[in-house]
Amino acid sequence: MYRSTDPPELSTVLARIRKKQEDYERYGFSYIQGRTLRAFFDLAQEFETLENFYRVCVFVPKEFMGFDSCLYLINPDSDRPYKVCDSMKGLLACDRGPLKEIKVSESPYEIGDFFVAPIKGNRRLFANRPLARAKEIIGLFAVYPMSQFGDTDRLFFEKYANRIGYNLHYKLISVQNERHIKFINTLVADIEHNVIVPNMRYKLFLKNIGRDIQMLEEVEKRLGEEIKRESLDASRLEDIYGHIKDLQKDMLEQYQELDRHYQNTSLFLESLLRRDHFEKGQLVLRRRMCRFKKEVLEPQLDRYRERLRHRGISINYEFGEMPDEDIPLAVDVGLISQVYANLFSNAEKYCKEVVNDLNEPVKFMSYGQEVIPDFFGPGKPGIKFNVYTTGPHISPDEVPYIFDEGFRGKDVRQKPGSGHGLHFVKKVIEVHGGVVGYEATYLGNNFFFVLPLQANTKEIIGSQRETPGSKVPQA
Image (cartoon, rainbow, N blue to C red):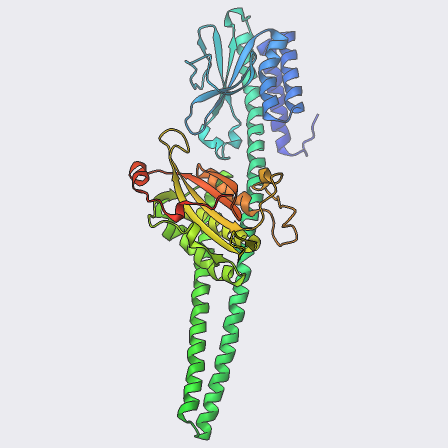
């Protein structure tokens, strides 16, 4: 009994409870059917993973009532059903049989000896993407043999499919949210690694510009003192003029470097902070045709050239310069640029001096590309991009893990780093449909990635010259 002072929502809840009581009396479900529903509710709560929930959906009716069944989900992109589990084989991967005639319908229907009921989601959850694109029907439940149905079995399996729908929808949303949160956490690490940490260089730029401004003020002060003394002569004017020219040149270089860093930061921020990434819970590419060498590689090389030189690392064009051909590729320029930024950053940190065959100490980085026919299958060439550095080979025990999130080899743990860079490289290349890899080579290590070659592949392969850029030093 409820009081008049209780909130009005309580009356709504009580009305629904009484309506359910009336419904179940009207349904007239048997004792076995009631036990089947109770077992489904209990087990749907007990098993948390989607895979086990799929099993519960199909095996509860079989164990309690002797009916076989198939569970289908709707692909939100194509609106086509695909089977995920049945009571004969269990979990299935992309299996469409045995019902080729299965179709999406808002009402139950029959196919031969099969009864097919739509699985409807919770209307209040359809604001969540990408499930929103599946509309109200998120799956189908097929039961057989229908020839063995009793008087209430058809109604029972309609209601059973409804119960699957509410539980399934919540579990799909839960999995989607978990994946989304994991992706966002990874994306935050990407932003920290590729934007926030490199942006500490702004402090260095500003410090250098501040130093030049201070020196310019001192030169201005000197010039003012000379003017007051009216003792200017050609040698002093030439000395002051030389100081001003040097400062002007240095400030122009600082400005250009700051501008390059700003352009690069803007590109990285745009490619990492896209609304689509956060909405979809995955990296969403914005591909466009580009001249790969000019628009992707050279801007990143310009950023790192002086930093490499400062660490005594030369760029050895004998092994690695890109050939003259600049093959056009459809890529996400911002994300692929960050791939090179991570590889060049690793080169800066981990390149080491070694002794070559002439007993000469060498310390260098090289880069290049080569077309590999049939890399992705017959008639599907790939283009391999290499970044090679001198130094000891990576331990064979560590090679399988170097692209894993957070992994750092024991030989480099004393150096600053997060172990995130190569994992980021792997994610970006794979979402482009490519692969990443590592090779122990002569005098050092080669990190590479291979992208599908999309356009005019026969002409490009046929005309590609044998150049030093297509070679990597081999062990």
